[in-house]
Amino acid sequence: METQSEAREALKVISLMYHDVVEGGAHEQSGFGGADAALYKMEQGQFRKHLRAIAGAVRESPARVFELQADARASRPWLLTFDDGGVSAYTCIAGMLEEFGWRGHFFVTANYVGSPSFLSGAQIKELHRRGHVIGSHSASHPERMSHCSPEEMLREWAESVARLSDIVGERVRVASVPGGFYSARVAKAAARAGIEMLFTSEPTSAGRSVDGCMVLGRYTIRRSTTAEAVAAIAAGRVAPRLKQLLLWNAKKVTKALGGRYYLKARKSLLGQG
Ligand SMILES: [Zn+2]
Image (spheres, rainbow, N blue to C red):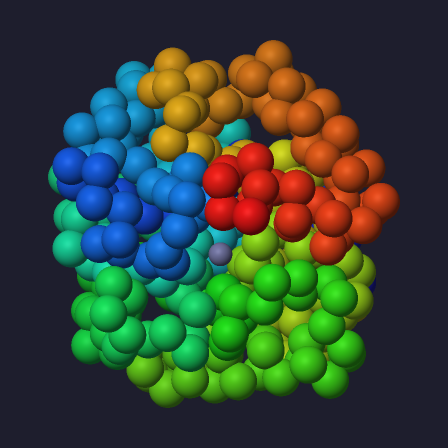
């Protein structure tokens, strides 16, 4: 067991965090509504440009996270993740990835399954059947996961894992933290709920183990991210990744000063305050 956990400690992977892909600026088509969420929603044509640019910059196809454990020495592993569980995972994204022979990770907010603009149970099952990885993105997408009580955290992970496992017909072992509100307690609760791999929004390629759960960072891809930038990140170039890390550290300081203030300031900047 010790050897395995040491191997996990050494896990290094470049993970890209996307959300929804929409057409003609119709941001309400898929996933959560609002100006904040729209910052992460990509136009179809732009997403295709991203995929082409990445394909031209990397040597390997994107990994699936559980294959990484089996082959930790793969040259420069990278992978694709999509948060929230918006319906575009099924209507658009999966098919576009498959044109490249690629598979992605779809992190689903369990309480929204079957709601308008979100994936249905049948669609999730179909994505799983086609080789994509289905994971949890919590049950209710709490505004600040790291501020929930330990009981609430455990419930968010355990209930979502149970619901999604039931849908795909096998145990769901992977998850991503909603809103990037990560703390060690969030990972400990995930580990208790049987989650073995937990993706955060910290822009790093280095994994670390918390109570046997592998915590992996991700590079955030926004509507404004260019194809050149995303290709450089996927290919492992240092400069664009360092830039994200510096910005993230600055934001972390603001969040530490007061999560509530951070959310309010962010909303008012986006004209929702
Ligand atoms: Zn989310």
